[in-house]
Amino acid sequence: NLRSGVGLYVAHPPGLGKTRTAITISQIMKAHRVLVLCPKSVKAVWRDEIKKWSAGEECPGPFDEPWYISMCSGEDWRITNYDQIVSKVHEKALAQWQPDMLILDEAHRAKGIRTLRSLAVRRLAKNIPYRLALSGTPSHSPLDWLAQYKTLAPTHPLWSQSFTSYRNRVAILGGPYGNWVQGFDPTGMAEALEATRPFTHVANKDVLNLLEPIETIIPVELDKDERAAYDRMKKELFIEFANGDIADATTVLTKILRLQQITSGFVSSTGGIRRIGTSKLDACMELIEEREGSQIVVACRFLEDIEALKARCGWTTNEDGSFNTWKKPVVITGGISEKSRYWAQRNFQDGHANIAIVQPKAGGVGIDLSAASTLILFSAELSTIVWEQMLGRVWRPGQKGAVQVLPLVAERSVDSLIYNGLKYKMEATGLVKLLLEYLKRG
Image (cartoon, rainbow, N blue to C red):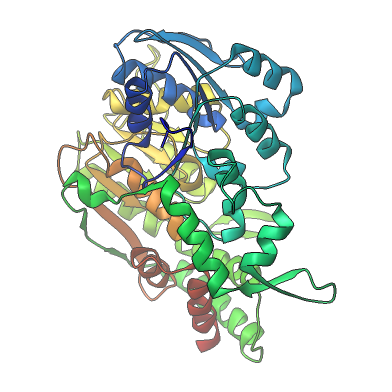
């Protein structure tokens, strides 16, 4: 594709090594100037991957620079994030550099047809001969395909259309103004899907021959206060939903979140957050203690869980700066800096830290935690995609053995429904319906 002047979409699931694949392709193409556009949080990861898979030379660049400029294996690399190219000055500087290869990491970040980010990407791509898109995130709508494939194959009859023409071709429209998407036309969908095939490489993890994760559900018995709070909340929600046949997804998920919080041992109200128990926290610490010396990742949705685990894992240090227990945790949340995220991953992979406490949405992309032998699911995001991405941080190339996956499931609670939904890759709408029925059963 690249040699014939069109782009390629590498649609591989999390953990399959898309970064390494892209670097290898750049070497095969003998690209001299490679521009990488990626989320801000993974710029430093790209720097390390270039060093690792190219000539092994250091790729310098302080974290506060607009982009990293490095020389690796005779190639110039510039790594910047999507939000920066919205700046006309930044876009102009990159265009003047005249890259001959463009790598769009997490390419779905530029799926909006009229967003400033997508428009800047397409303007840059227009003058770059080799264009490579990477993403492991499933698409939610065929309307998201147009902007991405316009970048890769702008002269294709379908992808060269305007958004209005494309939408009219694939969508069923209705509503008061006749332009609301009511569904998708099977013929138009088939045509659009067929038009993606020449420009897309799809694979799955079977090609890696990795050992399948070993799953062991860890049942957690809530204490008296936690059980009373849970049953009381569920009864209130039953009364709220019992007579209603329709509930929007956001409302259902918000109510389920309140039940999840109680299984984690705290309740949130207008008066603030109040801890009512530590059953799940105690169970998690038991698992960690049993695996002394192992590399462990703990996935936590709630910041309250993360703070409690930090305290239990010996977050405090001695006077000389060393940790006061064998448990040396690093934390990756959405609120930490790019630099902190980089060093958290690096310290965990190098063995300087034994435990990585990770928020799934923050740690689901752009980091390698393959040094871990165990993944503990403390509290889950209600998204199969986020769970797959989180698992992909541990179960990936570089993993030396079978990953042990340990979901903490509060007995007689919503936890088991959520985990089964994630495990069997239930779509968002199906999961919402399942949870709504649970609330209605009382």
